[in-house]
Image 1 (cartoon, helix red, strand yellow):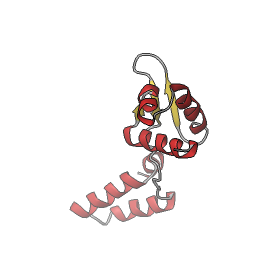
Image 2: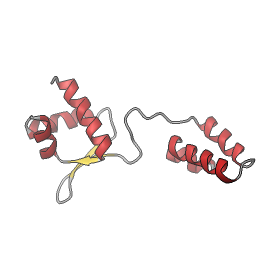
Image 3: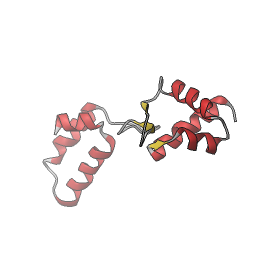
Image 4: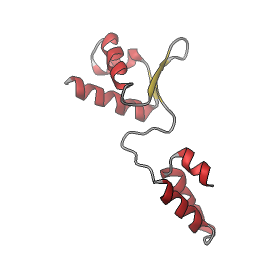
Length: 112
């Protein structure tokens, strides 16, 4: 496995699990803990991940970040919110769930 393949695997693992330890990743990927540290340092320049030391520490992905997830634009969110006033029942619940799932959390709260 190349460096870029390993780093891609690390970010996919972290996005799926939301948290992991250096030791676990090293074991799982068959590399040293130091290699994982270097990989995390490089990945943290491109992705919203961070480390926390001590009891309960590890490598975390910032809440709300998912790899390859696309979000709606502010105008798309505003349009759906405007449409919500004409809906009721199940249709309203469906559109609201679409907004919750695909709007950036901050964007949705600002427009609601």
